[in-house]
Length: 148
Image 1: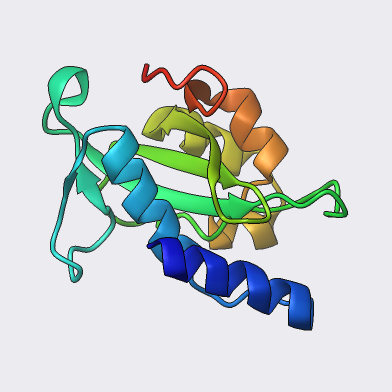
Image 2: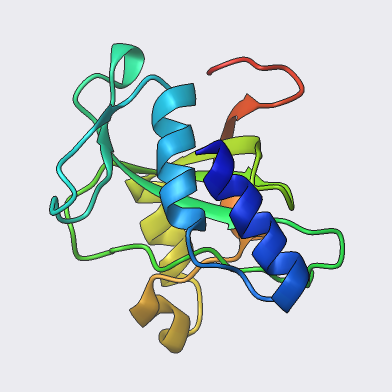
C-alpha cells in the first residue's frame, strides 16, 4: 500500500490528475483504522461490516484527497442510495494519500441531506465534503489517533 500511495502522489504531481486508486486506498485504510471486516468485492452497496459497537452494520466507504489548492466545493463519490447499507464512512486524505480524518454518517442522515439537494445531485447520491462533515461525526483523526 505504501508503494501505491507513492505512485498515486507522484502521478498527481506529474499530471495534475488523480491516478484513480484513492477509493481502494480509502477502503484499505478505513477497514484497518476502524477495525472493520472487509466484504467480498462483488458485494452490492457496502464495503465492510462493523465490529464492536458497529457489530453487523453494513458500511459504505468513500475517500477524497484534499490538497491545499483544492476547490472549496469538493464532492465525494456517488453514494449507492438504492443499495442496502447502514452508514457511510468518508476518509479525507492528504496529497500523499495518507489518512487525515474519518467521518461517519448514518443512512437516515444521508437520505435527508441528499433529499435536500438539487434533483440532478439527488439522482446521483452526491454530497459535498463540507455537507458530509456537517451531518457526520468525526470518528478518527491522525492528530488524535483515536477511534470513535
